[in-house]
Amino acid sequence: MDILYQVHYDNRMNYIDEIYQHMCFKTSSMITFYVCFVIVVILNLLNLVLTENLNYATLLTIPVFAYVFAVVFFRYKKSIKMHQDRQKEINGDKVIEIFVTATEENVYMAESTGRAMKISYSDIMRVFETKNTVVLHSKSNLLYIFPKAAFTVGNAPDFLMFLKNKGIKGAK
Image (cartoon, rainbow, N blue to C red; front, side, top):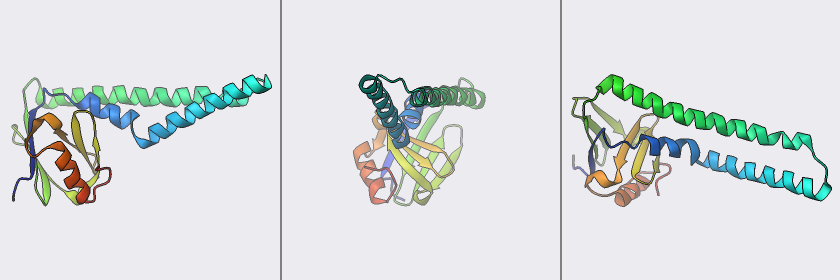
């Protein structure tokens, strides 16, 4: 079992806000939502300027889009709070060291608490990159975080290429 990539960090390095921000606002479905919203607003404004006719049916789409965005924003804030509450309940104020290791066959995560997990690449649903992390999202909705600055073996660009060669969706 040769270690190809490894990160070492602790739970004081909080990347959760950045990760949930990506998951809630920067996914392809949300970008599609933003584009549709902009198109609807432009069409409504053009309709108003060109026909000088206020069409209430099309104007109703704006509050609907605003409502959907508000729900996503609420979900984002609630997810962060829930994560922080879980971590506080599980770990208290203890500093937990985290080691995530990638080999040719699997990804392993070990914590200084003694908790350990192993995941096969076939169980990884997708990978995404934020400003400071590479995140593996498993089919069981676990997130394996690889902070870019915390690589002790390998580096983030090579790791993303490795994941792409493994056929994992989202790897660049």
